[in-house]
Image (cartoon, rainbow over all chains, first blue to last red; front, side, top):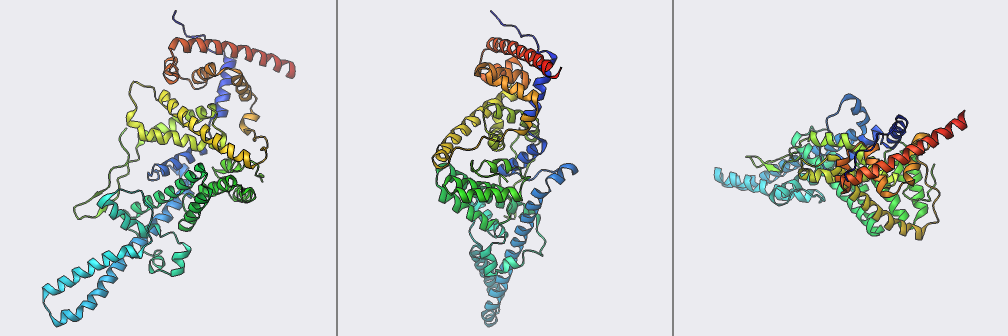
Length: 275
Length: 193
C-alpha cells in the first residue's frame, strides 16, 4: 500500500528545527575561508571579490601578490643573466671575429652564445618540485618555475648572495610570468603539504617533519604556513613528542587565535593545554 | 559545467602561455549555495568539528573533479549527500587509525570542548538530543527532510530507499518529534511559569 506524505510539522516544531539548522551551519567567514582554501587546492586563481570580502581576504591576496611579484622579478633577472651571458660570450668571440670579420661568423658566434646561456640557466636555479604538465611544455614550465619558486628568500639563497635574489625587488613583472609563477609556487607548496599529510597518515613522522622543514626553508612566508604549523603539531604529537607538540599548539594559538585552523590546532594533540 | 582550467599551450613564437583560468562561476555558485548543507551533513555523519573544514573541502574537490558526471535527472543535494557520506567514512577510518596511535601514547583526553554555539542554544540542544535518541534509519530521513528540506523522492535517491519507506520513516520520526516538543514545552512551562 502506498504511503502518503505525513502531516507537516507544527509551527513549534518548525521553529526548533530552524534554530537547530542555524546552530549547525558554518559561519560566513568559515565558508569564505573554505572557498579560498579550496581554490588553492584546485589551483585556481584567487577570485575577483567585492569590496566587502576583499578586506576579509586581504591577507590571502597579500601573500599571493608577494609571491607573484617576487617570482616575476626573478624571471626578469634570469632573462638579464641570459643577456649578460650573451654579452660575455660575444666579447669572448669578438677576438676571433676580428681576426675573421665576416657576417656569417659573427651570427654563428651569437647563436652559440645564446645556446650556451640557455643551457646554463637551469644550473642557476635550484630544482623545484612541480606537478606541472609533462613533456616539452613541462620543461618550459620547469625552466620558468625554478627561479620563481626561489623568489621566497631562503637562508641558503641569501647566504650565497645570488644576483637573482638581490634584483628581485625593483623590477616590474611581466604578467605572463607572474601568473605562471604564482600558480607554480602554490602548486609546489601544496605538494609539500600533501607529502607531509600522507607521511602523518602513514605514521612516517620523521618524513613528515622533514617535509615541513623543507616547506619552511623554501616558503618561510608561504600561503600555507598555518597548515604547516598545524601539521607540525600533529606530527610531533603522533611521534610521541607531546611536550613539543603542546608548545607548538600554544604558540600558534597565542599568535593566531583568530585563524580558521585554530579549532583544528586545539585538537592537534588532545592533551595539549589550551591558552 | 565546463572545465575550469584549459591546457597549457605555446603561441606561434614558442613562448609558453599561461593557463587560461576560468573562474567557473557555476562551480562557485554550487559551492556557496550548498556549502552549509555539506557542512551540516558531515557534522550529522559524525565528522568531528576539527575535521569539518577539511572534510567539506574534500567533498567539493570531488565535486569539482566529477562535476561533468552530474546527471540532470539527479538532485544536486542527493549527489552531494552521496559524496559527503563517502568522505565522512574516510574521515572516520583516518580518525580511528590516528586515535589508536594516540591512545597508545597519551593519557585519556579531557572532555571535548562543547560546541559553544550548540551549548548556548537550548532549542538546538533539544533537537540534537532528540536526534541522538532516534535510530539511524529514521534519523537521516528526518534530518534530510525536515532540517535540510529535501523532498521525499530526493531523500529516497540519496539513501537508496523506496519513497514509501521514506514516507513511513518520516511519519514515525515526526510523530516522535511532536511528542518530544510537547513534553519540552510542558517542562518549560513548569520551570519558567
